[in-house]
Every structure is written in C-alpha cells, then in structure tokens.
Image 1 (cartoon, one colour):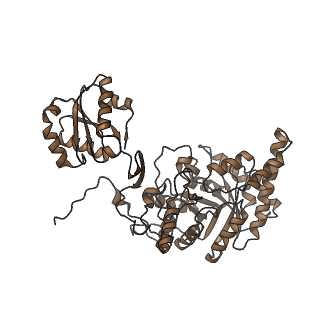
Image 2: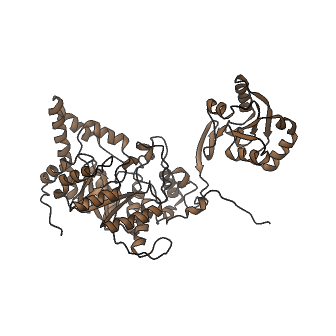
Image 3: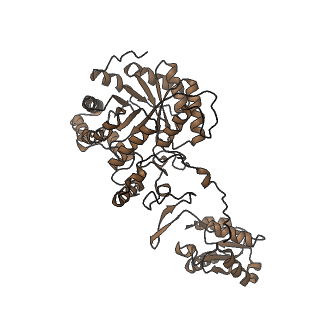
Length: 215
Length: 294
C-alpha cells in the first residue's frame, strides 16, 4: 500500500471540512500508511490545509475485521456523527468496510492498494501472491510464478530470462530461475518438465465470494 | 530460408506490399511480427493476408501478451479462412519495454499453451468441446532463445512446444555461435526443424540498443568491435556504408556457420526494417535462386 499524493487527498476531500481518520495496527501500520504515526502526520497535513480532524478510529488488528471495527465505531459514535467525511488510511477493503458500516457518510481512500506480499525489512515490500484462486506452490518449490513472473507464465521462463534476471528490468529476479534452482536442490525438477496445461482463469474472476461450511 | 518483414506502424498497407516485393524472391516464406514489444503495428493476420495476395507464403506470429483464448480461437479461424497456414506462437516481449507501457497485458495462455490450443482446434472442436464449423489445419511453429537461461529449462521448453504440436522453430538472432552450438546439442535429440535466426547489424548503436533493450539478446564484444573497426577513420556516408557492409559480412559468416551445425534446417533473416539488405545477403550466401516450392 502507498499513501496517495497529498494533492489527490485534498482534491477528494474538497467541500468536506470535519474529517475522521481511520487506521489499524495490522496491514495499515505494517505498510506505514495507517499506523498512529501516519494518522498524526495526516492530521497535521489536513489542519495545515484548513480541515478539522475530529479524531481517529484505530482498530487493533485490521479494519477488515468487521466485528472489531464495529466495536470501535460504536465507541466513537458521537465523533463520527459530527464528521463530514472519513479518510481511510488502509486498503480498499477497509474503505469499503467503513462505507458498509456507516453508509450515510462518505469514506475516502487515502491509500492506493497495490499488492499482497512480504516485507523483508521495514519500508521494503515484494509482491508474492495475486490470489489467483488455485495455489500451485506445492509444484514450484514454494515460489509463485503467477505473482512473480512478469508474464505469469506456467511453462516458463520466457526467452527473456538472462543471468537470473527478468527481461522487464535488470533488477527483478527471474522467478523461473529461482524455481529451477530450488526444485533442483529438492530433486524435484520433474515437476516443471511436463507441460502445464491451460489454466481455469474463472477462478480469479472478480467479484468472488466464499461461503465456508459450518463445522 | 524465411525472412521477416516489419508490419506498417499505421494503416498504409502498400508499405507491407513494398517490403514484401523487396524480399519475396529471396526466401521461401515471409514472417510477419505481432506488435513487437507491445508497439502497435498492423495486425499480423491482416498483413499475412497481404503477403498471400503478393503470391508469397506468410508465417503469422501470434503473441500471448495481447490476446486471451477467445481471441486466439477467433483469429485462428479467420487466419485459416484467409488462407494462412503457418503460425508461430510466441509469449511476447513485455509491453513495459515498448511504447505503451501503461497497457494491461493479457497472458491468458503462454506460448506452449497457445500451441496446445491451436492443435486442439485442428482436432475439430473448440476449447469448450463444441464442434467447429470448418476445421482449420495449420503448420504450427514456435520460437526458442538459445541464449536465455536456465539453459536446461529452455531446452525443456523446446521439448514442451514440440509435444504441444510445434513442427518448426525460429531462434533468437545468433551472434554467439559457441553458445548456440551448446544449445543445439540439447535440441538435436528432439528432432525438430530449426530455422537459425539472423539479424544483420547496421550500426554500433543498433547493436548496443539490441543488447540493452531487446530481451534475450547476446551480442559478444568482438561483434561490436568489428563494427567499430570497420568504420574507423571514415566519415559520414562512407563510414555508414563500411559499417553496414561489415554487419552484412558478420551475418553472412553466421549463416555459413549455422548451416554446418547439425540440427539446423534453415535460416530465418529478421530484417528489422532493413529489408533492402536481404537480397544481397541471400545471394552472398549462395542461397539464391530459391527452389520452386509449388
């Protein structure tokens, strides 16, 4: 996730004066977009630009946890009633959760949600999953070709893989080289020697719904 | 002997006819590229139709970058109806390397799966199993890059493409004969038809551009320094002519060398906009006149 440019945030809040900021201690904080520090910075920025920040709704865990978010909203109802709009410093799911819970007011996204990945060190994030709907990691040595190959190839690599790097740029690793190296060390290269057949892409058609059986 | 011509970067089909006329007597079939690096050019199927109209045999390239399985099927029906029989399936260079980096790439299939799809259609049904109103019959081709990594996996991909239905292969442009020979030791046992790729160089700048901007290209330093030396001490037009001549000489030497490599069945000259170079190059290699095929 990345905070949107300041100008974009001001543009979407034009005409709204009293703002409540939303953040959480989960992904939003980990991605440095909606932790307490970023909510404070946003408050300063908005005040400088003649807005009133009435306060924060900060959820321990994730704003996507509807139960936890509902409890926080109930605790802050007076502040939220007074607000003109909400600025959500978390992913697109969070903005929609708040929209659903408080439909009478508008919730705006302060963040561009970019990908699902890992954070090997603070401020550094790599995309590792595209939620394709059919995990293949058991065949590719725990390294995803769909998320990490620039072409999402299953019978990779393409002819642009050179010296371990992707054709797209000189820095991105060719994921098929990584898969090859690791399968070789596992003695499982046969996994990728056979043709990988045409995939069922309907599994990744949005919007998707899952209903788990009760257990 | 196959040649590649560049499709027009616009709507003027007479350009394709002009380019074909330059090369058609010097090759057995003409390859037409498909929006290389995502730079939009006239549709490869439409160009193949114009190639047919000139009396030449087209090879139509289809990239996985810009079309999903629905469009593949639809365009393959159309291509067959137009009389196009030779199709080369490629994954396609990433559009981030071209002029339209903002586009959404497709990659519904990869090149291996695209060959599987075409082969499937030749069986008389589409991917849903519905019977076709007219069954296409294609001569399926593919590409391989002897210079890409990892070598073993790249060789397995040739095998996969063969098993999917590819009968012939075009290679990436060859400048590094040593590596090509090593790769051919892996390809030979697969019993496929290989057309060795040749791109005549016409400037040092072009060589450097290809090295840095064209995926999967290996151009050894000595090739670049040969071009440099050829132009040394000369000015403007003379310098350009000397470098072009050296580029053609390198291409000629490479053609003669690859023809002696077991498992190579032909040559595929990619003119990259320098169609005028092809007749002289083919003649220099004693590959003209071409045998009459029909």
